[in-house]
Length: 245
Image (tube, rainbow, N blue to C red):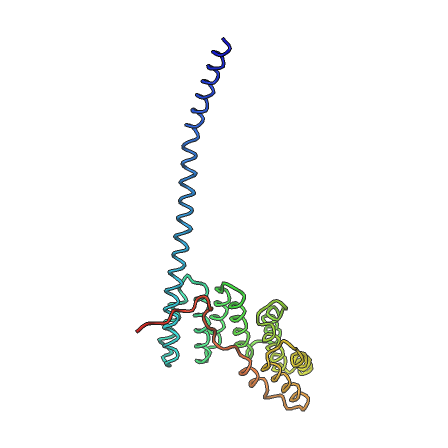
């Protein structure tokens, strides 16, 4: 009799488990389908970004080639197409090149807007600060010292990639504004800075000597031209592959 009761109870338990399993099955299948959709979505997005970066790389290389040939208007148009890419690195680079073109055309305000847009689009602090530094240099002849300092001081923090160049730019801005004492103090610190590039130390040494001699009035323009960042190159990890003939 005991065995009979145990057998009945086991059968009842089995039926309950089956019922619960049948109720849970749609939820389990739904969760599995959702996980599959998420995985496919992630894969699809990664593929999209990779293809977009490759397309932007080709366009960017073409734009650089055209610019080097002196076809400025065509290059500007090509850089504009790259700037519409979802690739943030190439978008930032293209906007910076467009800013450089505007500067050569004397369109300073447009250049600043493009540099600021590049800083906003940049995927990392290296590209972002390059754009911010270019923007500050573009404004140096028209903005107040306070405005320039507001832009440059965050870039001169210890952990920023262009810290030393930002410090030099601050010294140049002070010199341009007639703050010779502040400029001399900054240049003196730069010329003794062991981790500063040799060019920065040399310019700082000359600046201090000219300030001391009272002949530094024409110096800011020379220093700005020497200290300005060159046009940026594509990140090493995203350099376009060589073209085959």
